[in-house]
Image (tube, rainbow, N blue to C red; front, side):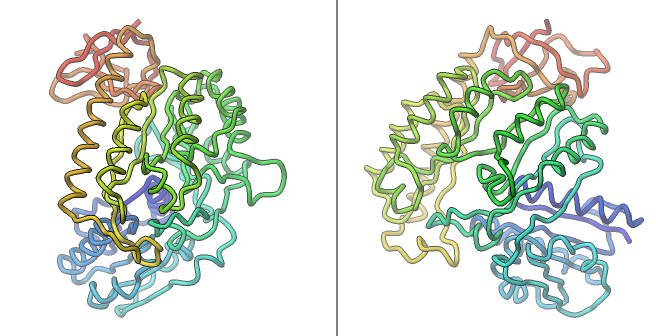
Length: 434
């Protein structure tokens, strides 16, 4: 069959779609773009916001409308949490497989039923992580490796625990096997990811933790760069900080979910730290790695968030040397405590507050770029820029960089070169090769 796959949402979804694609291909199927005609369209859905859920339903309807003879299969978080809503939106003749069945998706999707099919069970009964393995990455330079699934935080705004279930970890030997396969394919950077990756290892027997698996990976694969996707500040230990600051092939890049700088809002969100505790963890990291990139997740418009509480978040972020912000306007999600709270902020106000935070994030990014001018970094070359002919890459501390004077040079793709960050042109950092 000709099979097209479409992914919405997080890095874990991207990893899983790629693994599913390889399983289909191993059975002799042809993988094509979702813009092409296919016999089967698979949509890996997202439910983290109302917008993502709506986009998931939109793509299912689009494939159903544009390809009436094709088999349409949907999986992922929106299927797990709102199967009946998708069924109604799709108008029948769709196969729905929840996250609890995602490990069987190739078997399920390969059927030929012409009616509605639904394979959605209780995600909280799932004890083991789906054994997905990528054998050849979509892009050879960088690859995601999912080592953990599920979340047990139950933040009051978040649907993810209901979509993904309890925390489940990939055994260390399987993590090493996956990374070894990618290294053989020529991948130069591995992004370690999960739904709540700081919980890694707690469900496994033995003294297994995120720090231990990162240590073993960086030691066993010295020719690879390793980057951590995101981690809660409360889960960053002194051992992890000391080790990461002194490990050459662990990227100087941290992504931390703050959500709010107001303690009242953090408490209502059921976040398990205060703003002071977040700041203490951040400063400990920054003191150990002052040139590291620090990305921050921040939410605005949470129910009951007053103007003063929003300004507390702005002031909190202004005083920290953060690098960039991922800004999310609050979106009510089914099953969550926050959806039933009073004091919902108007859409107009949420948009205004989000715009203010994004402007702050843009300014912070440029400050970080200027701070790093004159420093020497390792640059992983990813591709050639079509307009300038220069090579583009990303430094270990997450600075998107153009290599000056590289027009016409060949053979740099997927190599790591040492560069000096020299200037900023039109908000782009330029570097000279050393």
